Image (tube, rainbow, N blue to C red):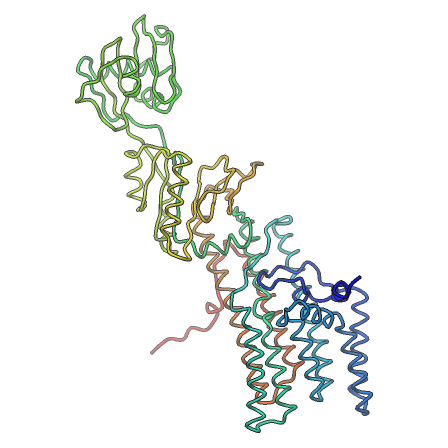
Length: 556
């Protein structure tokens, strides 16, 4: 066993955030408290040594007892600090804590140093206990474990917090000594308090739990997030692409029947009898428009040609009903006056053109109120994909105030459109692809975020960031609104931590604060924000924030 492995083993019971292998760039829920019988005995022994040392009058004996108290309570922190220094991670919390302990003892405040380490250790254990208990409570609330990682990418300024704290601590000590407002020992003691306050634990410790609570709350309301990061990314969504599929479409309706050889009723009767051999939407629409009887006894040799139409013999006479391509294939000439790009089927009898039937899609969408909510939440671009024809859904898209409409696109064409929209967004803006008619979604689209609606009983795997088990279109704007609310909660917790640190900083400069008292208040702020994190569970509840509970002051 080399020295590095020995240090790692000695720091095994150290708080997760202070271990050498912990990455402060990604905060995670702490999997265990580290509290066992050995640690309890150590903390009890440390407390006894601290009390005895504080009561002893002999300076040498006092220092010895208090040093033993510090080693009993935090030899693992010392090991973690040495390991961090060897790994060139000098601004880790373990290093800062040990420096504060040594510096405070060096300036003649051994009791303060020993009590500080005890308090810091107890607060660390309480933080882990509260976090683990809250996690179990959330899992029980939704009926089982949620496989969504509680991750949070820490802000970039975190890496500068400890170096800035060190610079401020040094500046405070120098100014107090130069200006002679305090003795050297008191100036160094105040600098140690400032250095301790530069640890980011109290500022960010509740953030993973806040997002984890929000993800669990969403799960109980038919919204499943792949991870907390997926939910947090909703705050940057500024463009949404909605894939309606066929939409909430009914059968197409027959708009007009035109024939120069037959009456409209006769042409419709002929087409309906021929289309009775097919089960396509067009065939069913034509049959629904014809109110008379279908004479199946006169039909023979019926062929249903997918995407083209039908060919059937009625008493040995061939009748074709279908697209222009089918007419060309059967050698039927269509007059130029009857050619159109709309939703139309042509009818031929034998080799002769008989007429045409014009249809129109009847498409309804229940997403209009939801899209209006998305606009209010900052979404500036809405794109609609539909499997219906362009003419049939153009009015619907206009009513929905969609910015772009794409119809009958292949999967490859959709990917190209989504990629172009991602490239056209400004920096920091994201595109969300919302598939409302998803039955198989094996791959992630080229959008930044994917959301798809799946049957609740489905056993298929969907490579999407968000899975919705309900067709309720309001779930998407509600999820985005909740993500913004949760982000606001995190800012509130950050503000609480900052206020406490500034208050302690002022008290330290005035000489009214000790190192252990700073640890108590800083730890209380961390625990308080952790206990408040559970309110993020309310996905479908009113999104109250702290300001909503403050008294309303009327302006004059």
